[in-house]
Length: 331
Image (cartoon, rainbow, N blue to C red; front, side, top):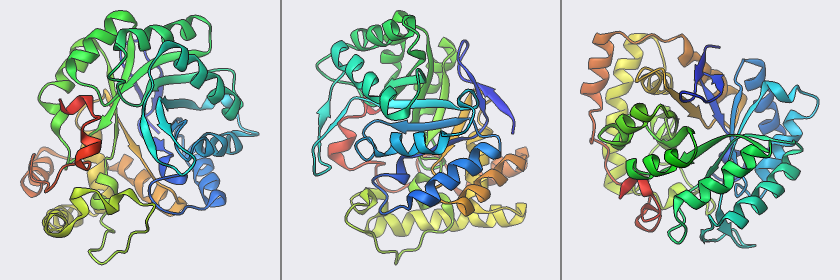
């Protein structure tokens, strides 16, 4: 497994990371035993970057990761944690809290659930509209000084917020959606991150399954799967997006690879400062994703991919309207 550096002063991590959200939440049922086995397989394959959130399953995801790391060398894992999303007992969402006292509270609970004395990268999941980013980052910086956090990250913020946060404390990376179907960061956010020496951890590289090559128009989604309200999975939007996937499939087959592998390799090819996160929940999907590491896309192949799925071609926004409102990166 190759390694990449997150930002100028950030940690060295595997060139492919594992996103754990779907093992606990939002993508329908998952099996804990298979989830732990998948995390073990990722670690054995050299993946070090493990991304979670304290609100994924309301703590379940962090407890799952603790179980997976039990008996393993903690220093071989780079744990990235998002915090700040507020939820109720039924799984509903009620905003974000980025107050300094809340930051310290969230961190204390995460450390306990994870069974560790530090978190490698700690980041607010979204901006709290009522708290300046300087105050939130300042509170995390105090936790860095205390040795409880190693690096500070951000998630789904725009270029101006990146600058303001970075002026308070060096930001290791920005976690943000980036894929062949979501390329909004290319205009302003990515150039700003590069100017400031901030890495990118790209989630949604398979566009929540659309770019996996395994999605079917007839697939039935359960009530706990948020793709049931995602615009890109609805009606004519889904038809148009699956047509784009078919065009990409032709490129992948000519390469002797799967659609998912080409989609992951494309993100990785956009710069050494970008680390794709894959949300594999099963070992077979992880094995497929790992195959992207061996792909070297030529200029001709990159041009063919661009022709098959050009920027802006995806139908529908990446989140439903109420959720788009919370994305500082989209303002």
